[in-house]
Length: 313
Image (tube, rainbow, N blue to C red; front, side, top):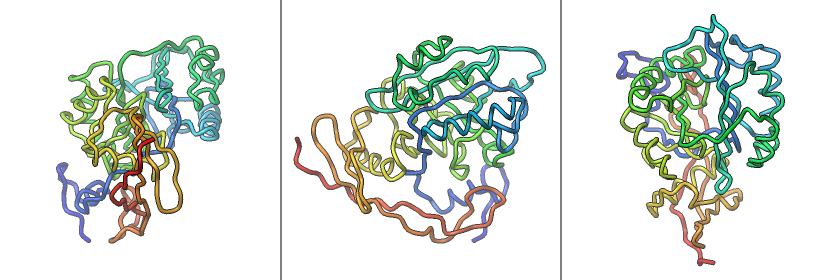
């Protein structure tokens, strides 16, 4: 299949192919119980934790430690300010994404290696008290943040589509938007994560991103472009979105993925209702590239059936 030019006038971009094929977004968010991001200006390589002006030994070790407890680690930059020639403190944000244990902390450290003090197990558990005790520089942050992937070294789409989105959002929501090094799902660019809930959206515009940010401030989400909430497995993400589409439920903490088997996922509502959602996977047809410059392959695409309601508790 020939990939046509997109809004940038470029052909061959993975995001162009994705839009042309109308690939479904639900169930494509990363999986993470918590997030830790640290400000690191300057250039980023494809693997930013070890290919930036961050100490590569620390970056690699801390990234590995986060992965072991299902916490996502990343680098962030202020829009339009990439030089790190002068000394500065590094902004840090730590988030727990689980319903009922959703919180966002922020603070500054003189050196990113101070993050070694952070209790990552407590981040994964959503244990707010233990996290703040481990790194006293952190304090609660009011209101949500949006992280937009802009790392062109990782994927061309993220730079071409993500950077204009950041520039526009910075005017709409100053101090709420950050560039991020890698969020996964390049082909859905421009893509973003909204903290603390960990919801991820793709194919964003400045207007749609601002709408999601406003909804997040109310404790809600927006279904358009929703890829999933990182708290859940990818199948759980897809099932939760299916229930939201069926019921119109937008409150972030109203739904919980309660369990899954090989063919279905159970989603509970806090009012006692629940649904069994058929979720299976199949090879993508036609094959497609996962990111720019890669050969197309038959990646797995989630197929979601109609949620079947059960008897309320």
